[in-house]
Picture 1 (cartoon, rainbow, N blue to C red):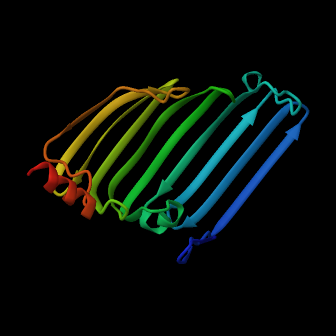
Picture 2 (cartoon, rainbow, N blue to C red):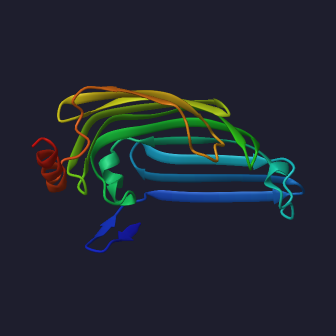
Length: 194
């Protein structure tokens, strides 16, 4: 797969990709498998025993399924996230999906480990990012930590999967954590400290 950007083209090798879907009577079964490199895969299975292709109300369409992801070398996928340069890290996820399509219940865990990335637009290097997400029903709990300029920032909180306002409580604990490293930041800091 090649992604064409403004200044360059970048590629991700896909060793194999397979998608299958079967609709028999009212039972829909689908499976997607993508293997990008050794020990790196995405495996998604979704099933609906009462699927109606003419049902517009998604709260009436029930699904069951699973999502399994393993990516050992996230720096190989930096092309998928513009303006972020991923240097290192891994992603693992194992989720079960149940309920209706409009507001499914998720259970399982997703982990980002040993992430190191650079955000060029604000000149920020993030290291040792660890992020853990545990979903149960309609609630997701998260916690993690990261470092910037050798100073840690720890965070935790929870949110609802269906959350139209996107507001959720989050606790941030840190000291001298660098949020930005750019000329504008230093000029503003100098003006404020005069």
